[in-house]
Image (cartoon, rainbow, N blue to C red; front, side):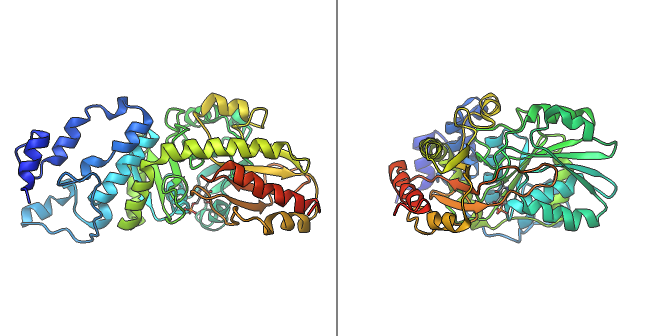
Length: 415
Ligand SMILES: Cc1ncc(COP(=O)(O)O)c(C=O)c1O
């Protein structure tokens, strides 16, 4: 076998063994200038060694120090203890921070832990939180239990409030939390207007940016300070990983990092590796999710049993204009309000579907559907018909529509 250093010298003009890392970072001079799809293919690969394409999967808790002087100086080392980072975590965190256009990133064991850590980082006893009414609903149990117990007060606000949120701000409001589009009912928020109010009052703007995996909505370009994601969804993309991420701007980073380390969070190396693998194909997967979802959503809009399709990418759908203004694309997740019909009829539609699974997630390659009842406290949900949330996967939309067609026939007792 040819020695590696000879291979490296020949192909990369390098003379030292182990300098591939240097080669990678030298080769791509300005990653930021490249198109998003290109960036996703290359970012974080400076952590790969020995000429390999992918960074290694490091299972590491203990890092050894060669002498006492190095041990005493460990806080200046890139690696000192497993939980503070490995080449595997650095590669993924660099990739997600770049994807989102933020300063730095940390990954967490789930999307929910990304949300809780971000909130706990910027709130303390006596503070006030403004929380969007359409937030991923388990966040409400965090608020009802831990945040309330810690003496943090929360006001839920209408997702469509826009700059009117100023009227809800109090002197002790420290965080305004957004999620756009809203969980289940897909309201598109006026992010720049809300963020402007947050900043005018010295509050931190945190957004749940999971809907397009951070790819088609650039939270930091729209002024957000912190972007949280369920990496579980589109970044990992294959329904086999639980993970979250928190990306901060430069100002928010030190406070968040201190809380993250104090709470002792990290994620497993194999999961991080799978998430990084998923991220490489995010651009191409999302493009197809969007294309398929537009076809299926448009077909659903034409069904007599359907009242409204809540998919901001669809022309004339609620939130379409705001989506066009702020987003570069859409994902495969949307909802539908049916015309009033019994629960039994909805069960008939759902139970016989062959291609759509019923499960509480989304962002994988496969299509899903779940019935839901909107949970609101600051606003009223007035629609009378049942609601369904669809995730359109990478299957052929023709096959998906044929499956749904049978389902709507069952709902209307036509089969
Ligand atoms: C918008 C959104 N944010 C966060 C989460 C939480 O992610 P996880 O299930 O990884 O905790 C979810 C999960 O469904 C979600 O839909």
